[in-house]
Amino acid sequence: MRRLLHFVFVLFGITFLSFALIHMAGSDAVLQQMDVTGVALSREAMEAQREALGLDRPFLVQYADWLRGCLRGDFGVSFLSGDDVLSVFLSKLPATLLLAGISLFLTILISVPLGIYAAVRQNRISDWLIRAGSFLGNSLPNFFVALLLLYVFAIRLPVFPVISEGASGVVLPSVTLAAAMSAKYVRQVRAAVLEEMTRDYVTGAKARGVSFSVILFKNVLPSCLPALLTMLTLSAGSLLGGTAVVESIFMWDGVGKLAVDAIFMRDYPMIQAYVLWMALIYMLLNLAADISYGRLDPRIRLNEKDNACQKKRRSP
Image (cartoon, rainbow, N blue to C red):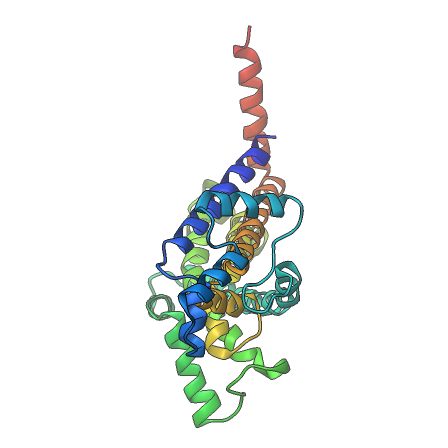
C-alpha cells in the first residue's frame, strides 16, 4: 500500500511539473503551427483556435481536466492530427520497445564479458584498455555517435539505410544506444566483480586450492547476479527514455520521435501521454528490479526477517 501511494504521488508530481514546464515555454500549438506553415492568422482566428483547443482556460483548469480524462482512460486528442492520443502512442510503442530490447541485448553482450575480463585482469594492459574505452564511450554523446555511424556506414560505406526502416534499419540506432550504455556498465560490472572477489569466502577457497575458474563461475558471478540484474533492469528504463534523440536522428518511427515532434509543435496532450507512460514504465521496471533483487539475494530476505523480529521484540 505504501509503495502504491508512492507511485501515485510521483506520477502526480511528474505530470504536474511537465504540464507546468510546457505552459512556461512561451508559445502554444497555434503560434507554433503558424510558424511552421507560414500562414498568418488574424487575432480573432487565433483566439478561436485557442478556444477550440481549450488553451484559453487557466492553467490549473486545463491540468484538472486532463487529469480527470486520464483517470477515465481518455488522454485526449492530438492538437495536430486530431487522432486519439492513446491510440497513436500505442501504435508507436512497439518500435521503441524493439529498439530498446535490441540495445539492451547488445549492452549485455558487450559489457558483461568485458567487465568480468577487466576485473580478472585488474591493473594489466587489457584492463587499462577496456577502462580507457569505457571512459571514451561515456564522454561521447549519443547524437555524436549517431551522426558518426551515419556518416561511416550509411554515406561513406552504404551498408545501412540513412532512414531506418525494416530489419537493417534498426542496426545503427541500436548500436548507438548500446555503445553509451555498454561504456557505463563495463565499469559497473568490473566494480561488482572486484568487490565480490575481496570477500572472505574467496580467500578461503583460494587457500583450499580451489581453481580460480571454479571460484569465478560458481561463486563470484552467482553472487554478483542480483546486482547485475538490478543494473540492467534500470538500464532498460534509461534506454526507453533515451531513445528520443536517436529516433529523431535515424527517423525511427517510435514514441521517442513522436515526443520530439510533439514538443516542437507544442502538442500538449501527446507530450503529457509520453511523460506519463514513460514514467509509469520506468517505475514498474524499478519495482521489478527491487522484487528480483530480494528474490535472488537471500541476504536481503534474511535482513528483512531480522528487522521484523527486532520490531516485534521492541513492541510492548
